[in-house]
Length: 141
Image: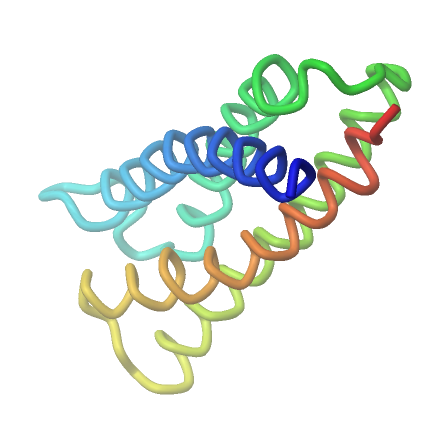
């Protein structure tokens, strides 16, 4: 029971950091693609990658210094490398979902883009990230 309560607390922090990263990612994507005179209106996949990298930076700082601050430090280079590899993989999930929606299904509205990349893609990636961070990147003592 104690382990389950600890996991709940840990997941709450992970979720909070993820929510902030999500706001950065979704906000950045919509700013780059869907606002009037958006700089990357014709390049949604590029915009998804750029906004995704910004959200990854926010997530690393939050997870290292808050969610798993009590976990052993196994070297900044190792942690950062693994963190960015894992997030690079999950970033591709969102880009693939967006590409399928845009270029296979022909859906190019702001709603379709956000559902495909920022709901489906991020949802799949979140499950993978939680497991990966707690078992690979920020190892328990």
